[in-house]
Image (cartoon, rainbow, N blue to C red; front, side, top):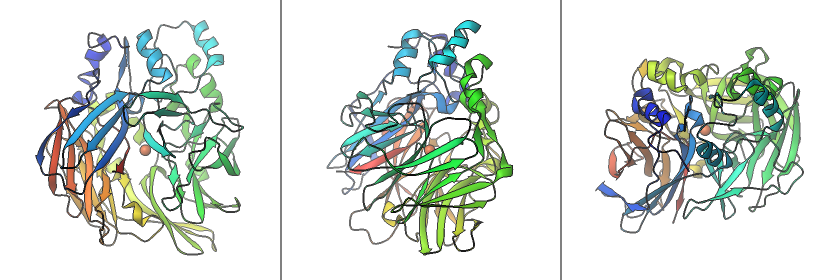
Length: 490
Ligand SMILES: [Fe+2]
C-alpha cells in the first residue's frame, strides 16, 4: 500500500520538527505492553484514539499537523491490569489512492496536492472534487457502530475490535454523501444518548443545519436551519439540557477560492479568512422546538468547548479554550513547529462565556492563566456546575517545541496542577471515573505520550486527584502526537 521507508519524503519526515512528526510506516500489534507501576484493578475497558500519523505519500510531504493520514489506536485494559495495544491506518479512499499513487492527490488542510499536475489537469480537477475522507481527528460511537470523524461531513466506519476500515457511512437522508462542512466534535447528551452536530453545504451564503442522530440511525434529523452571511468553520458545539449552541466565529470560508484552490495552489485553510469585525454569534437552538435566538459578542477563535450548563432559565454558561484569533493555525505548519515551536503567549486559555438570554449579552471571564487545550472533564458533570478541567498545555512561558504538559485546572481557585517529563509530548488527557466515586476527580487520567528521543510511545496513567504517576505501558514504536479519543468501560 505504501512506497515504504525508502521514500525520499519518509526520510525527510523523520527530521521535521525535531523528529516529532516522523511518519509511522509500520502498523503495530496486537501486542501485550510492558507495564511499570500498577494499573488500578477497577480500570477495565477500551481506550480508542485517532490522529494524524503518516506525513508522506511517495514523493509528497505533508506540511501541516492536521494533514497526516489517520492512524487508529486501541488500548485494551484487561482484568488483572494487563494492557494490549494495536494500531491500524484508516484505509480511507484518500489514503489508499495517495499511497498507491505515491503522492498526495486530494484537498488537504495545509498541504498542496502533488506538484506534477499540469495547469489543464488542475483546471479540470476543479470539477471533479470529492469529499476528503482522511478523517483523522476524532472517533464517535453511534449505536453499536464506531466512526472516524473530521471537520467534513464524511463519517468513516471502522471495526473497534480489529480497527479494520468498513467504509463511509451512507446517510439515509436528503443530504446524502455530498461535500459539506461539519464539526469533528459532535455534542453528545450522556443522559439520552442523542448526538448533535451541524452540516453546512458550501455556498456563497452560509446555511447551517443543526441535526440530531439517535439510536444509531444514519438519518440526520434536522432541528433547525440558520442563515449566516458566509460559510464559517466549525470544530465543536455547546450543549445544555435545553439548547444546542452553535457558535458562529468569524472564520469565513471563501467558497470560490476553495472551488479553484487547485488552480490557485491554495490548500483548504488558505481559503479561511479571519473577519473579526462581525464578532461571534451564538445561535441558541431549542432542543424541543427548534426555535433559534441569536446573541452577538466579541470575536475570538476556539477549537474546543468543554462543558455548558444553565445556572437558571435565563443564563447559559459555556466553557471553552479561547484564542485571540486564528493565527495559531500558522504555528501548526510543520516547518513553523521546527523553527519556532509553540509560543505560550499565543495559545489558548480556558475561558467562561456567560450568555444572558434576557439582556441578550455575552460576557467573558478567564478561568485559569495556565495555557490549556484538548480539554476533558468528568462527563457525569455534563450540564452541571463542575470544578475540574483536564487538558494539555505548554510548560515554558514562551517557546515550547510542542504541547509538553498535562494540566488539571481547578475552576474554583484558578490554580492548576501539572505533569511533565523532559522530552515527552502528551496527548489529550482522558478522564476515567472510578466506579462508585463520590468526588468529581476520583479516577485516573490516561494520555498517550510521544517520546521522539527514545523512539517510543507510552500510555500514561495518572491519579486524577493530583496528576501523580500511577503506571505506564510502553509501546515499542514511535507515534507522533495525535488528536482525540474515548474510553469505553468494560
Ligand atoms: Fe478537536
